[in-house]
Length: 260
Ligand SMILES: [Zn+2]
Ligand SMILES: [Zn+2]
Image (tube, rainbow, N blue to C red):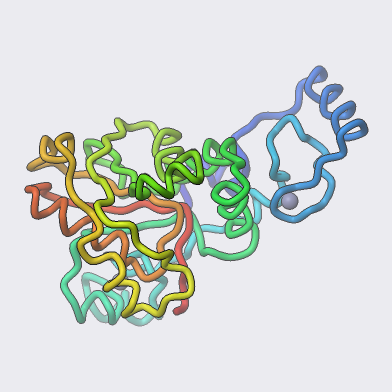
């Protein structure tokens, strides 16, 4: 699916316009004096004033291509979209899901993976603005008609260690009210490296709805996170939100692990 905005720009590139003369001069000085490298590809940045990732890396982040599972957003084998009216992947047909619809900017791979890492583990928080702008454009179908964004929270101890919650930074870059509707009531070990079944167990009972979250009964909300791997974290969040009366829970992530 290509939006009019993306179509006009050819590929969905970084949301900045042609360089002004002054900015070009600043960039020329910065690249010589400071010689920073792109946080994703490591090549020298020729426009360092535009942030820590080069334009070529941003442009290389391709949208997941249709047909997609109507629920989780996984790419489907092409025949499915023709043979069943509501296209669902085998996993979504097998089990009940609390997330009604999930979409991502692209696959957790290449430049997008490097950008998420730089944001999360190297504290390059300015990347959340550009990434959030891409989420706004490519996630238009899940954002439409929703009343607010709910960032997936970190446990207080991890939040303190990292200094920020990348999901909240991403949510703030999307143009909708952000509600801290969830909290982590249990510190969980990182999901990285855990097999799918363990991931669901690992986050079970980890989330609770805050007072602000209870005010969302009847609403349609969009969970925001950096990466969705098996969807276990998003499911755990959606479950408690629905138990608190939220009518519809959608999810929008910067990246999605596909082809598991
Ligand atoms: Zn690059
Ligand atoms: Zn699915």
